[in-house]
Length: 246
Image 1 (spheres, rainbow, N blue to C red):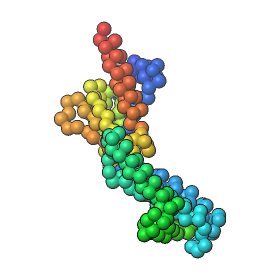
Image 2: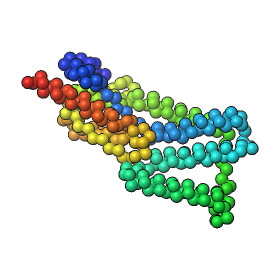
Image 3: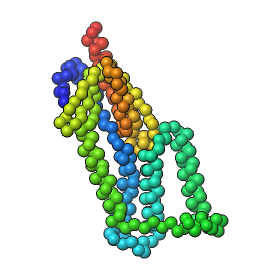
């Protein structure tokens, strides 16, 4: 990893004066990170089940337990939809919510008016998912382990943007590639509105100067803030270079 001596003292003062960082880290995460709503729901349901019915109980759960089990499955299903399909436009998101509202309305109607469609009403009323606290704790624990492994993995593959260079840190031995950054061009793409809503995630495309290949980083968190900060940082250096030339 390069040190701060690669940045001129004048550039450092310019960055400090504008409140900009000396480097910005970019990490591309796998889609499993978007499962955190399911993980939090599993923890909440596990704690409630543990306190109300014990750790191993599976019988005489009551309506609240059935409701929580159904809610967990609903959130898990929505999470799987998020990581399985892309919703790049508002129209696709609107269509999804329309289908979800239609399904929810149909469920409420069958519950409140079971005689309208007896066969489907019987199927809906028979849905009573049951799981004890241990099950939800295990779901929570498995995802936590996966999240920790993901966190460890990205420590060995990330990008660092500095005012005058772009660095790629990768490998267990901290291998590093350098690219010129002053003329770096960046493009931001929001390819899934759900993922953007969950973690401000999107695709960041880097075009280093004097480099033919394009660097594509998927699932960069809080991409809007990252893109704005990088643009300001590189712009500050360009202004500094112009001032020095005069």
